[in-house]
Image (cartoon, chains in turn green, yellow, cyan):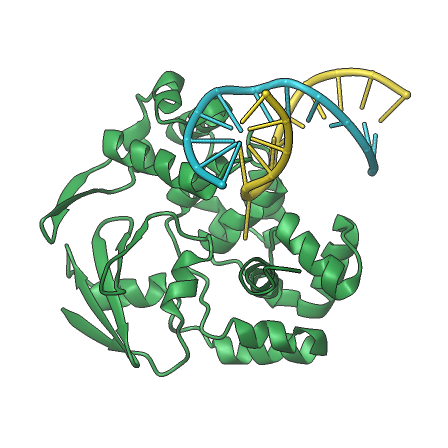
Length: 280
DNA sequence: CCCCAGGTCGTCA
DNA sequence: TGACGACATGGG
């Protein structure tokens, strides 16, 4: 086991359970088992110490710190957002300790393509089925886990295989995307180097990737915090806070107020609306 | 049975 | 541009 001292607010539960991650298990001791790109970890937050066990200890501390985005100065970001609009003070304070996870881009792309018009439990089920059929098996704490496969491991997968993983009508979109990655037509690393605007445009040239999927992928897979998804929950938040649910107005207000941290501000609104103001 | 799920796409005005 | 229905599948 390794221990990582956390000297800033960190809400492990809401960070994992807010809808950005699909492959975690809450254990009976309130620890979480999380399947990362190349290993399985178990994390338990005790006071200000994160206790981590893993199937692989190579560079584990750096990998965990990067995954949970623990080196970023969220206190400064939160102050910036609150100073941008006093209406955000309560919302930001209700999300203290939330982090934007840094996840594997390929897995995030496929996961959010599957998320289209789908429920969280069905999304997780499909992702797990793909991992079980095509990913690498490994043992951890006496249990069997399956890593999510990389694009090369999926090169011979047929659309019908994906349909068997319960992707429904999304199977052809995912199939086409995997083909493009494997034949070199699509380079998933290029998005790291593109501006957020260009990356949004490029991503949406792929069938099955619209503005919602593209923005989620760029936030969670590429660490771009100036992009933001607008979904039904964000619209509800804007109706409540700014009295509009028009997408163009939401985009303009968000960019004007929150600038390079728009994605974080929108995540806070999403989380606030979904989990805290449940009966409004 | 009907409706919805962190949408996207094609179609028709 | 902008509105509208279809799309597989599982759960309430």
